[in-house]
Image (cartoon, rainbow, N blue to C red; front, side):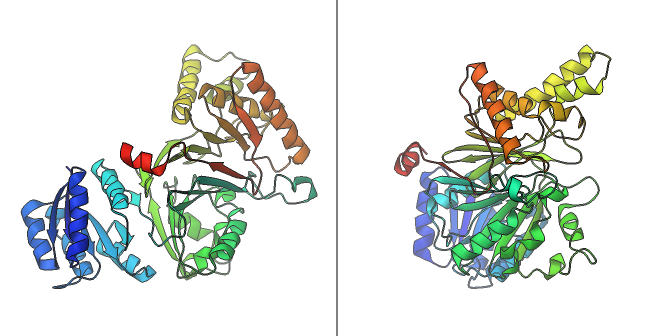
Length: 449
């Protein structure tokens, strides 16, 4: 139900938000202080309560705790707002029960998007600070910072594609979203520090799984050492340890001189449960993939197109057929494998960009059956079946030099050309930037919304 209670002593701002949200189909109540807000909440039980961090007649944080500790408000979503943007305030609001923290001034449209996500039943939404320096209407930008699998492989033979492990940066709709924290997150962190020169950063890090080549760069991520910054780490719980415990474990003595709790940045961990959530206005879907342990791929729906990231995956049909050895695969096993592969095709379908595991060529794969990685032939066929626009071969094997990756990319393009279908193919390369531009103006999008 689209119901919201606004609690703010600023009558003008409160009324403006109320009128805007009411025009968008929301039922809105408003209050000027904590006590009036509490009385209205008890009377109407709104789905969402948006409150100022500092309120007369009791602070917003006290009110938030009151909601949190009252069983009848268990389903109520609490959103804190503030003109201040201190990490401590964010932490206090979170501990008091607020799911979201908006920094004033914020656009009514941004609040509307947040509320729409909540109305759809999504309670895992992470809003950016609207003091961010990333323009909301800028083109979506993707940059590769680590493209290698298994272990970093620096050296003169890998200088063109790069030797860092998995890390991709996406800037879209005011968000900076990082995919995986392999060794490539170190140069990304240094670049962010140079670009923003000490200004506060809000970053969201999505972890596909906690194998070393996807997390071992995190202790070297410079923004996580700045108390002005907020780093949200999202992922799915591992088979034996939680997300935070796993990242913390690699920083324990004697492995690392600084523990996770000693990092001065505002680091927030969220273990995801649902396979669909949002980061600000960006809808994100996840799917489990065929790789040892708990491993997912992500698809981000940006204003300018969708980006799918599947750094680790093994094709089911090829795996089952090779695992059977000399015996032919049974019809039931064949049907099951095809069904599993088709699920991934549907998850990817019509992606503008697909970044996918292509660690081996077909011959190498035969020596690595069951390792959880794909050969380039299967990656291209996956993209073709899903009608992807652009394919990036990713998770390059540490033994592959630049010439080998060039050869694999040429082979992939030949497969695509032979299919008669249009598919742009390239090997993912460190520092390569891809820009997705808007197809229509922001004003047109606002009219359509």
